[in-house]
Image (tube, rainbow, N blue to C red):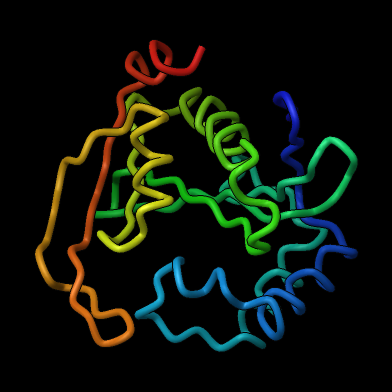
Length: 174
């Protein structure tokens, strides 16, 4: 799948080196993506390895490449409340943010997910202002807020859930 300056694709063997780097030395992104969760870096990398050579019926995670072929992150989809499909995005290197890659990757992935869904969700926390701005730019609206449930670096934050209908997505993004 391609959209402007990015390509979404399935994971390949050469991506594993990036995941190792992103979980050992370039870890700033972990301060934004559910920083209250403690994930074992080796298990995270092993999950990526386990997904090699497996082509799912419907993509729940795709890698993001720039137009020049640099692997810069991933988009993913997961279920919340057992039935609602939520989407997410990670671009680990700070230098790859703020260039439209996240917007282009997430909207392309959402267009694919909307082939099977009428409403999509995304979740974050009130301290993750870059993700909140991106969600609002795409057209998501806040539909749930749980105050002071997330603790990040000693401070309490709200858990946020946003939603967007397929028709609203098409109005905002196509």
